[in-house]
Image (cartoon, rainbow, N blue to C red; front, side, top):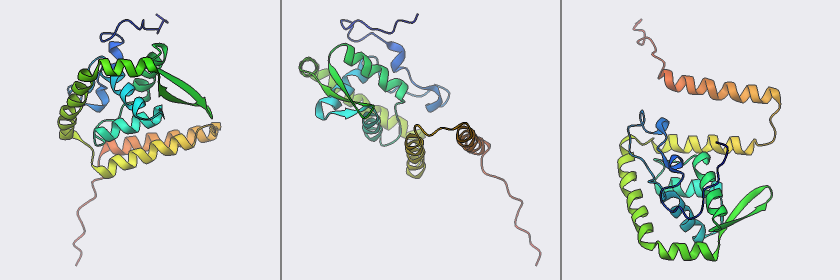
Length: 192
């Protein structure tokens, strides 16, 4: 059960669970599934072929493709990058502790062979984007969520026990306040 290696010869049916929709993002899990099996591998390969980049850059690029209506989690992106690396479609060079991925010759050849499939992926993204817009977050909220992610990334490596508790409480209290909804104030007093 601990084995996570996927043999390279399985092209489209492998690691199905990686591409499942995230129930938290899609109203009880009833929303559209964003990526079909195999789609994300092909999309990441195409993006890396356009320009070498880090995993975080890829998350941001995909987020932009969906106009912020969907953001893939690191738990979706990084296993797929590992699969592409093990399949020798991309190579990762660690610089400053972060891997920067670039496409290999085998990866470019695979992209050429799957050009039509890639067109299909991009078309499905457009369809998914329109479906997701029905329950999209406003741009201001999307930006605030991005700022929060960035703040947590910048904090990396400075987690004292006290700081863990402080940030945990900030995040949990904010989450609770969002779930609880707006505070219902009593009607304005009409004292005059």
